[in-house]
Image 1 (cartoon, one colour):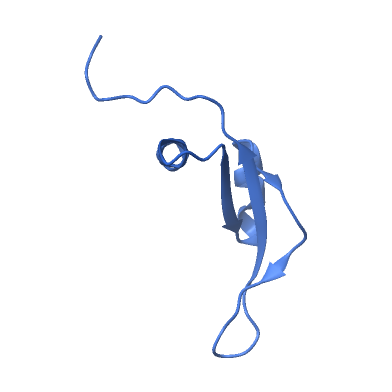
Image 2 (spheres, rainbow, N blue to C red):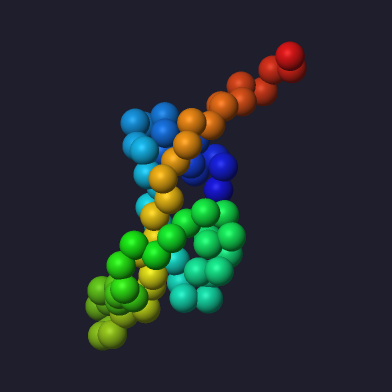
Length: 70
């Protein structure tokens, strides 16, 4: 998650957004994401799509590690 959030910030975004499966909602809530709308369904060529929960988190300034010590 930290790498995804750093990449969002490097690209100029102030928010992290994702499509969570319904079972993973508690996991994302535990790291600060909140439900941004109600449950939706993806589009599928085979008919009814998979339900998902859109989630969003306001990203704080995160120190980007460059892999160097000190």
